[in-house]
Length: 385
Image (tube, rainbow, N blue to C red; front, side, top):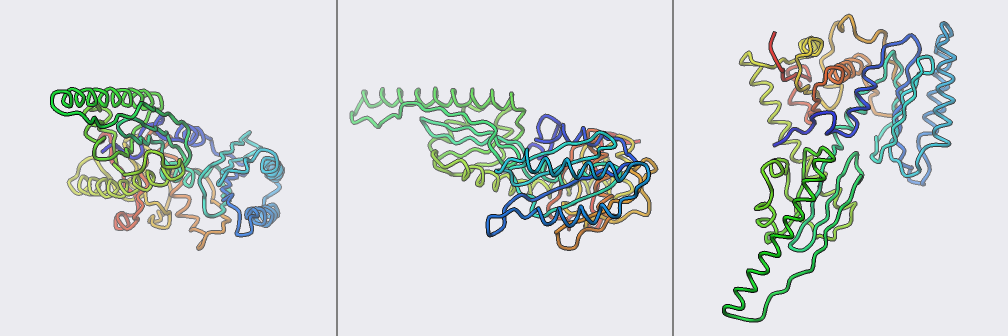
């Protein structure tokens, strides 16, 4: 089965995350704001009260030295202007990274919810939540196909970014018998093969152009052998799940069904990767576990794939971070229960940021207990030192 998270071209936000990870730490406050833009039960926005309270309180605590307060106040003004003027009403989530003093302002409107509001203030952008969204809502293709039609979607970050459709004439069963029936049957079979070749040609082109690494297929028992007889190995290897839906299933249901199937497969592959990690580590192979060893491997550029718990609370705190880590603490305001331990939050972000800086893949492990006994993280390595 192909990897859930692979190269830069194959994940929705990898290039943006790489760019933010390259940001150099600054003495000015860097705001990383994550807002759940879903309305409340009365249809009203829920983020306004959080922003008013949080930004007002933080404004009073920001030091006036070195232009930090001015930078913060300009960021607050620009964030509010963006929310008033540029936000799409249909967006369900929003991530904003701002530091006026360092010339940073990037905003990402998401079609997926974030469930809670978060404000992180530190020396660098806080990327862990955005990397988590990138992992939860991958780019993939969903193909619905029968013997005379097909619909092909490319989903990314919880929305369709492309749609293609093939509609051919529907064949009917012949009422004749004998040699005429056999001849007609061969004609139908040839027609079906030609239809599937057209479908596969379309799929191949879209997969190549969109750098797709995962395909979910929906087809019935008649269409299945016809399709897979035409699929070349490089495409069949990308098929991660088979589901059953009507060819005319509405788009939002296609997204829900295929994403559920994808996540079920991801849980299985999570376990496989954790087993591979632990096995290689115990055998003294190309693997390390625990925050300290993983940070060291990331620093040396050894990491092929970072495995990290899907919640920072599952990480074992470290006594110290590497000397080149982002300076200073991370201040946190959130509506989430518990609020998060700042030390674990900073550690989680340090791991994710270093993975992006070194071109490593990132795999968030949904069942955090799989990694708890080794400190909540580990890495499969490219090479040993």
